[in-house]
Every structure is written in structure tokens, then in C-alpha cells.
Image (cartoon, rainbow, N blue to C red):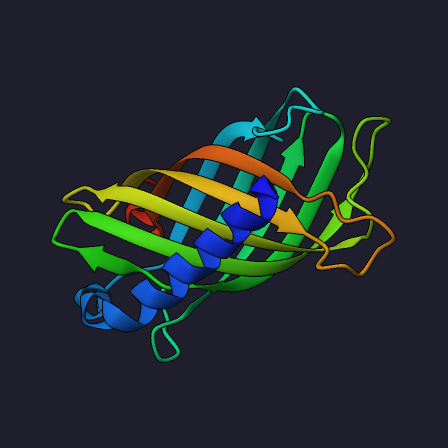
Length: 177
């Protein structure tokens, strides 16, 4: 029940903020591509697995209406991993704070004696709140939920809480000039 409440809340917040606060998205017209690295706790609410997750995202700056595409991959210290692609929306809350709901279908590999997500195809939703620095890099925290949406025999789902750092690809390229 707690898992369903979290998922419902994340979806509701994402939909409301994406529509009601859409003018805040316009503040990001010049946002570049970002490389995001994230580290955090996997299976944070039920603690069936006491593992760390490391994630790497490439977030494209090009927008389609209010959405931006991204690709993602992650490794969990229990030898699980996933790769996927999805969409996100940057919602600017003033000049410094950015709320970013995200959704991505992912291909999941791995299971343990304590955790089997029930299907290789998992749908990952994420809500991130980040602080935006003058150079447009961001430091934030996110909560993720992965679920197979009932495609498998079981659908336990799993949540992660992550610390995220996003650096613009412009800044990253500048380091190598």
C-alpha cells in the first residue's frame, strides 16, 4: 500500500506541476545537454537489499514541447543493473531551484534471493529537486520508483534515494580545451 501511495503521489505531482507550472519551464530555453552522476541507497523503504546504486544519465537539451529526452544506466552493488531511455521536464521554481519529474522504461538485469523485480522490463519514475549554480550545473536529491506495471508474475517494485550532480556538457568540454 505504501508503494502505491508513493507512486500515485509522484505521478500526481508530476502531472500537476508539468501543466500548472509550465511557464517555469520556459526559463530553461538555453539549457545545454547535461551529464548527471548519482549515488544513493537502493531499496530504501523496505530494505530487502542493503545496496548502493550508482547512476549515469545523459540529458539532452533539445525540447519537444516541455519534454527533454534522456538516456540512463545504473549499477547496483548486488550485481543488478539497468539501461533505458525516457523523458523529463525541467520546472524552474525561481532562478535557482529546478524540479524535474522523469519517466523511463528500462531493461533490468539481475535478481537476488531477497529481491526479484518480476520482469526484465521495468518502468522507472523519478522526482528530483536540484539547486542550479551560476554555471548551470545542478546538485540535487531524487527519489525513484521502479515497477513492472504488472507485466510479471510478481511486481514488488523498488525505490532509491539518490544524490545527483549534473554538469553541462559545455562546461565538461571546456575542461578538455
